[in-house]
Image (cartoon, rainbow, N blue to C red; front, side):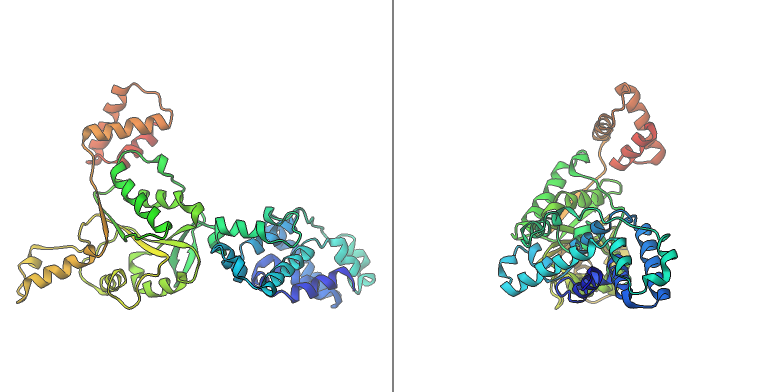
Length: 408
């Protein structure tokens, strides 16, 4: 049996890591080695498609890395067990199957163009074409697969730290088109980048820390004035706990009817999730309002143990209120008011963010200027900051940050 045909049989026999055959490069390689006995037209087509894809994926000199990376970010039984720290619960047969699959992927990853072209059944018929075909290089595998000898400890450690599937590759996600989709260019803000509002921020940090440690934690509502750093706080705290297995999934408020579907999607994933709803408010008690209220407390489809809701809003009670709402003609007027306030009441932790006074605003400006190495006399800096705030009719951390950007 030649090397290419062996690689084909090994890839065909994948079990635990079968999912990588749905990825672009492994799928194209599988099609190529499958065509080893086919007519020249089919073989050359598969060869050209494969090389074209390697160039598009920027891995024409690192096939082995791309193949093992596909395995590294595959979501399967082993990677889920490793993420949860439960590889010890796998049977000997399951562990052996996992190791065999990795050996198979490594073998196929190291196929060279020379191997495949020498093993092609009709190479004599296309000698002239073979001589000008583009060639790729195999290179080294992804770091956890280097020096793989059958032991799974190094790979399991990677998943225990980074998670599994797309949650190992990305840190931030959005609910779109009825599924979780990764955010490629997410906000990488860190806690140390934030200025002031330590009291509010520490409450979020402590709540998140308790959640990560499996202790009692609350759904959290950050409310108050615009531009005070509510959303930034949530993103910074999630980034702080990323290495411990925390991920964030943003749910647009207009998609709240999908909440039960999102909950079902993440319930069995052995990681922790913050479901983030930004700028949450309702003009009235519509269906989305009712759906979120049921999920927070009291509904059949409640949150799983591995998820919390963090929401931000400019409104303390989330629902827009008018005086006529309080002077309504209903017989039970108090019941109407209780219904209006009931959603915000279901967040166990509510934290207020308010615009700073002049002294605090200028302190924020000073801290940001220092962080960005802006050397301007304090008096001149403050005069400019006040003028900038006057133009925008507000003093806020966002205004201070915008002013600093103009100086940069």
